Length: 331
Ligand code: UT7
Image 1 (cartoon, rainbow, N blue to C red):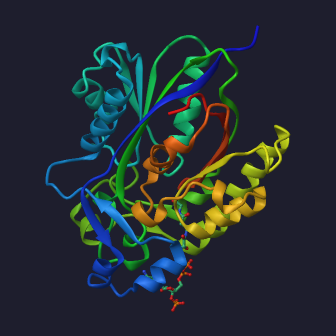
Image 2 (cartoon, helix red, strand yellow; image 1 turned 180 degrees about the vertical axis):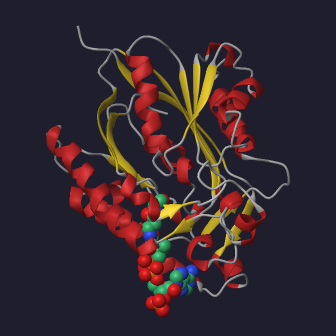
């Protein structure tokens, strides 16, 4: 008998209404629409403006969208994995709050943090629980309020990030569809290039850390770019190779949306034409844990049962990897 696989069976999403365009950023920092567009591919991003609303607000909306589309009773959810780099609070899992707010009273939940690879790693975790037979319905949410950790006077980071949330449901599949293979990696040497210095156990918050702006994201863009290009392309090419997939066999690449140039380089290494590459970076920027589910949400209607999809991500830590999944339904 074929081994039980874990398939994505529903998708949901939420994006805040406020649109921060390149033109508005031109009035905030020394930058231009032309620079941002050619260097990153980003034209606009969404920002959660309302005071007092954190990542959970968007995560709840994305989960509710999924449940409404699928007609899913929250009481049937066994487990919720909350992939995020911007939890509501440092202590008290955001996922636990989300589970209670959506009425998932039979579920347990925790947060999973691996910067921009949070959702990709979460796919592996969610799928493993389902494949093992331990849980039947696992909701994986990727959500980040990046605007809460960005310095809007720093032109090297504020042009990149945006806020958003996406959710997918993992369930067992007996037809051989769902997650087929994964190649996940990390390398702690990278933490010097992309980090938030203060607010953790090594450098707790103080007047000094606030004054020095150490609670905002710091990124050495050039170094991260270099590692991202080679590592994301490497794992994606490797996962194709070891599953004997040619560029013709792959219907879609679902790449983390950090920079269009990184995505193009990955697609080139895989031999994929542009029409097979999911892209929405121009509309949302880099939403960290939400990029992959937001792509699935935007392209859901084009996906067909049996499509071979390669997911790829690279993020702070460093963390990166690639997942090969067969799509399980027609919309
Ligand atoms: O998602 C997690 C992983 N993150 C990533 O994958 C991000 C990887 N890095 C990148 O995407 C790119 O490195 C950036 C988009 C962040 C920067 O692009 P770049 O082509 O690497 O630019 P750079 O940092 O080498 O800067 C080139 C020049 C510099 O000026 P000088 O020193 O050459 O005079 C910067 O000061 O561009 C300048 N610059 C800007 N100019 C206008 C930097 N930011 C801006 C800006 N507007 N917003």
